[in-house]
Amino acid sequence: MSSPLRPAIRRYAEHPFWQAVGILLLAYIVVVGVVPILPGSAIVPKSVVLQYMITVLVGVLIYVSDNEERWRQFKEPIQAVLVEPRLKVVRAVVVAGVTALVGLVAYGQVKTTVAAPPNLRSIHPAPPAEITFRGKTITLTGLENPLRRYPDSLPSYLAEGKRVYYQNCLPCHGDHLDGQGHFAPGFNPLPANFQDNGTIAQLTESFVFWRVAKGGPGLPREGTPWNSAMPVWEDFLTEREIWSVILFLYEQTGWTPRTWEKSVSGEK
View 1 (tube, helix red, strand yellow):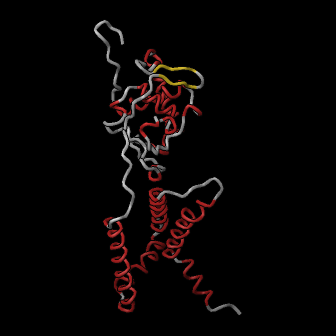
View 2 (view 1 turned 180 degrees about the vertical axis):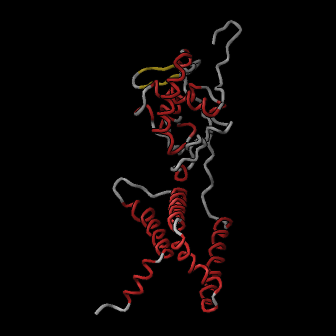
View 3 (view 1 turned 30 degrees about the vertical axis):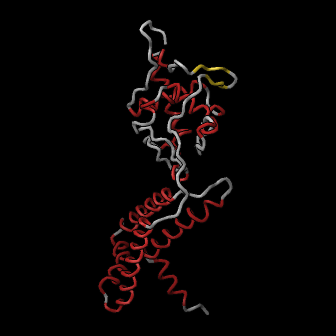
């Protein structure tokens, strides 16, 4: 004998509204519960979860609305809850639930939290006079970007810098170079916002080279705690790749790097 529940289950499974609800729930479970436990994966930031769920919701709405009959069936449960007297209790529960959800979100935004005071740190620490890059000594004092000596090759250097940025820097510093990449919410302090006039607009390119090459571990000890998650890009990028990505940063943001002052005699 077949179970009396099977027809009801089948009816719900074939209904566009409940199909949409099921897809949204499944998508949320996968991105929040399944992806983080996969080998080599990490907890998905809330901003990424929100973007993913919005994408899924848009896809579901496109699917249910591309057919008149399916769209009519999809709207039936919503219209029934809104107007039918027999569903007055359900309507009251939905209204109360939505009100409570909005209240919880608002409370979460304004409630006082207990946290340790922030660590005060210098945004732009004093750079060393010289550094060692893969065994080569580089003097930072007075150093300009060597790639700017070849104006005819700048387009190729900018293309290389763009490639380096999007392959390595995008997850943290973002598509708009504003420090709002997908990984950014997981860091404290946040990645640098290159669009802000308080970052690279205030720096020489040799300073930026030092910071990119040595990353967080290369910051001076006297200014700790730094808590910078910046990798040591010297281990992954060549000297030219770092200078190229610095060209790209200034070209994309429109800032002009600071230059070294020269004496009247022309010496740096």
